[in-house]
Image (cartoon, rainbow, N blue to C red):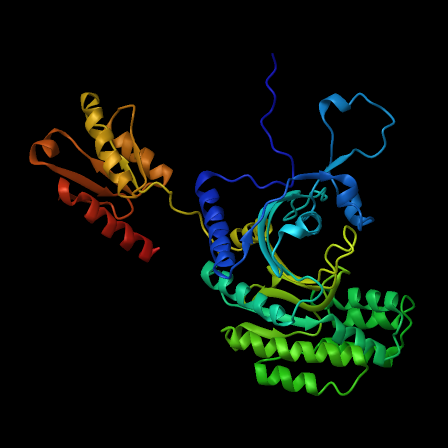
Length: 459
């Protein structure tokens, strides 16, 4: 019988163990910080009813949805769109979740969700069909204070400070401010405003000349003067909180929508500072629009200062009504998402993160098969003390056991041979430093803890 080739489909990230450990540690850091700010864990099924997922979407998103069929349904023809589909983000399932469990939830509802989502992306470098999203959202009932918009950057700062992947900046804008400014220029049609917003969002990727020419060209027909004013507006950046507030004031008076957006942005910027985020880590960027139409107020993008080519590593914003397609309740919210699979891939590709050390702290070698019970007893002692321990269950040359530990990323190896047993000692070998020492059996746990703490501190 011919063998089936072992292969994965394009667009998935399958990692070797030490890379998986590095990825898992990033997940752990994000989860820890989300919980530190009082967000509660939620999980939703990977499979949802197709009509629930596609209620408010269509177009590009609908073309990327994976539908799900059981093998029993494959032979049935003429059934139309399958009943079930894989979720393509975590926001639509959240909307369904809140609408379904509304009576049982406490508002404001603060949830975090870290799960895989699925999109039929065209296979290309750095684009994934299966990937982790790590989301937080605060959802209010009837209303939600703009103060929550200021809390979100504090969470972002906490996460990326602990991830330690380099200096970063949380960039902010407000969609009301942008829409109001466009209105002041005579662009009052909501559809046209949205089209302009989408073009403006391309500024950092396509450049000022492209955006100016597009807005002044036949597609928009705004004229050179209006295009120049829009370009000047979206190129506003701040270098400090005082500078940000000053630049907002310098925009001049505008219609009510613009004034509301400016007031919200000023309040958010001031409160971010009160939340403890240094001024070096957040800034005004009036080109940030976010492509998704449902954002209505504050919007965020986070970038690495030294690696702008990576683009946004965390984004989100304020939306007016999360679950309007499922419930008559008014449920405004604010949230952000970290696409961790893509971020991890980009960071590794840029050389900013390496493989991790093994989660196994110690390997207990086997010198004499007859003494296996003694090795197992020693391993149990270490595990009871919170030290992750593996035991060699099949013997062999000691050098081969050391080589196995080194390849598996296990730093410390314990040798308990006849001589060690006679002296009631053990030999500890540090493979990273190519060094070994003897320690009294009763002092082993204490000694290993010190070694492990030092190893962790040294990275």
